[in-house]
Image (tube, rainbow, N blue to C red; front, side):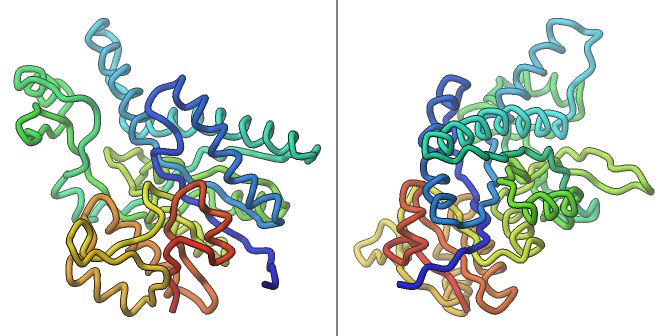
Length: 315
């Protein structure tokens, strides 16, 4: 097989980072090994990661602080996302640097870009906040949060109340030019963490929004803007399945955009899990000639690029 150097945007699932600070320190080491396998093959790798557990932890800590000190203002969700980007990037870039040096790469230019992503304030998602964040609360705690901070609280399957926020589509990556320059200069870039810091444009001012952007959609936008050859979405399964969990379950190796759209219309993929991943892959694969998307496991990324596993989505 003729090996071609590719520009690849890799979207890491939450399982690549663990749920706590100690777990993250361990998880990033194996994550770095899988990413360095691609870098060692000569590919240009740009990394996007989720931040679900991390931003929830930060949000809980900031909320607890306001309870302890009434003079302490509530921390906006956009600021919590920024915090999560920086500390995840800190661990991840150091793990990549260390792994690359172990492999003999003495020049290890890894950089994290704290990234803002613009959303449309008129996006219908703002009318129906549905993305749960933070811990489960009692009704009394939820009522206090709603009154004190204006949060939208919803009961969650009998387990308690949680804050819900909008999940609008990304429109523009504010730091795109800087990211392009770094990638063109052969830096290994970590960006758009957690889907990006959600902001809306008010005149010349970028205002933080109470929202969470799906990291798969942000990765797709980033890959298109970088003119990447490939978008890889890494998740908890090796391949995409139709009729999942049924007797006629089928794991897919190769999926044309037209067939993927048909499966989406049939409701084959679960909302909030596989659906946005397949939608993002279809969007990227249909956006230009020769663009391929893939969904697979973290540890199978290298094999997937070589066509040995994963679900490849293309025109």
